[in-house]
Figure: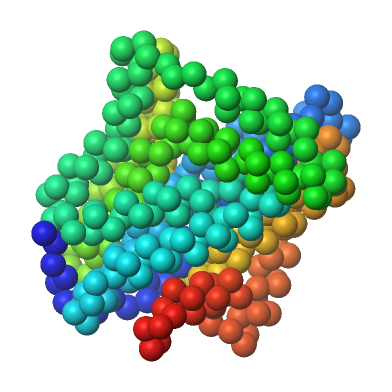
Length: 372
């Protein structure tokens, strides 16, 4: 059973900045995807739309959520370890925290049917037993989850579960955005189950949980601090992940694409993380610039719900219906504008508040009755 090392867990500023980067990337790619709304014809397109989409998909799709998932596991470790050092068990408190996150997710689904907060809240409960495992066993479970054993079995056994109900769910969702009330009701009726189904049939359940556990392990190893040989470890991760990314870029995965592509995405994700951490501790100028995303990352919950509200207003039929107006490049520019707007708005908020509005509510409710 794992026991705390008793080391102080200082605020990890590079993790905040990386979380801010992940949130910005999520906003940008959701805009390109029109917040899960599809049109048969789009009025304003550009010749570069295909290239722009391919580049953004390679850099953002799955990678930003992956970074977010790793940092979610890291946050669990910090909170749990701090409580363990005080002789307190964090399990029930974290379960309550996940229930609160679930409720935030229900609110978010009213605007955006592709919500991940509910999925995170459900899978987050499995961080509780993982917190008691020693590193050896937790590494074994993490690796098993990241190679996606269900997908391996499905590929070689030829077993494919019936996913038609997920497609039917998406069909229902696409028909339900004519008014806000209809959209909210339809999203609540079909959005939660359809998103969970999509996660299941695309291997994201095991992958997300594996990334949670990876973040927990990186927290135990204190790799996000500039201590000991940590930067050497990140250089090794950088070299290995870069080689894997290059190999994948020039290799056709063929019939094994469903198995290999997630591993390639993981390599890109780890490449982004290692570059961010190494540049952060190596160059003060980079730290000064990249650090400006820190408050943006500390307000990730507020950012996520805010992008759902703004994005649905802009792209859904009950709002400005940009889903059938703007092509990929114009949508990407809208996404960049959303990032700038949310950054400016929360920057003003941060002048008088350490946390975002939803983060403050979440924290107060998490520790209710504890005397904090």
